[in-house]
Structures are given as structure tokens and as C-alpha cells.
Image 1 (cartoon, rainbow, N blue to C red):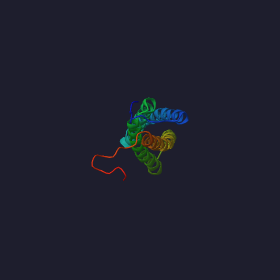
Image 2 (image 1 turned 90 degrees about the horizontal axis):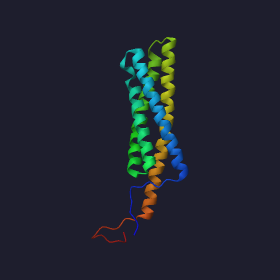
Image 3 (image 1 turned 180 degrees about the horizontal axis):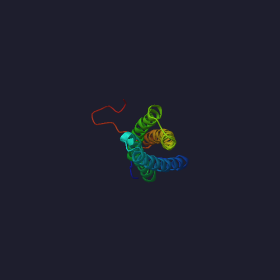
Image 4 (image 1 turned 120 degrees about the vertical axis):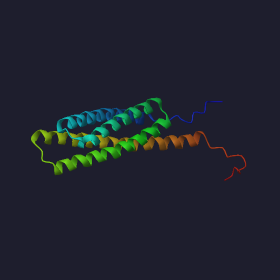
Length: 164
């Protein structure tokens, strides 16, 4: 009798390669957002850019978590990656709103305008990548659960009729 491995994600090759590319892109964009958030805090000497720094850090961790989930093909890691990706989407949205608010309310010089624009572009790139990854992770979990129900049908509990 074969091994019953209920925690293995069943990924088609095209989905696995595209998922790995998007997770590596998230690692890079998270690192860029983290660096530009630290530079923004250093230049402005204000703590207005802590959400940008946090968005970069969460995106970096979610990307690394996603790479590990794709490499080890674990359903539990994919579910954790989906959770951290949703958190990254929420924090990134807050950072995007903050960048727009800074552009609208604070007077900026040319150097500051370039920094705020690069913040806004990098956070937007991270948000788009995160949205695509959330959709792909949800598809991976749906396919894995559907395939596992097909290969590993649930047995009825003792005392319950099996025809329900």
C-alpha cells in the first residue's frame, strides 16, 4: 500500500514555474520596498514611512515563504503563504494610501518628489504582484484540495451511516 501524504500540493509544471517566478519577484520587490522605505525614513527624518518599511518587510517574508512552499510542495506552507500574502496586500494598501496622502498634503522639493514617486511606484508594483500571487495561491489550494478529495476520500466516522 502506498504512502498517504495528505500535505503534498499537486502542482502542474506550468503553475509551479510561474508561481516560483512570481514569488522570486515578490522577494525582489519586497526588498526594494524595504530599502526605499528605510531611505525615506532617513531622508525625511520622520516616521511617516514606517508602513512602507513594514510593507517591504512583510512582502519579503511572504515571498520567501512562498518560495519555500513551492519548493517543498506543502499544502500547509501554501496556506501560510496565502495568509501572509493577504496580510502583505493589506499592509501594502495602507502604504499606498500613505504615499498618496503625503503627496497631497506635504510640500515637496524635487528630491522629495522623486523619492515619494519611487515609493509610490514600488509599492504599486508590489501590490500588483501580491494580487496575482494571492490568486495563484488560492488556485493551488483549490486544486490540491480537490485532488486530495479524489485520491483520499473521507471515511465515515464510526456510528454514522455511510450513505449520507
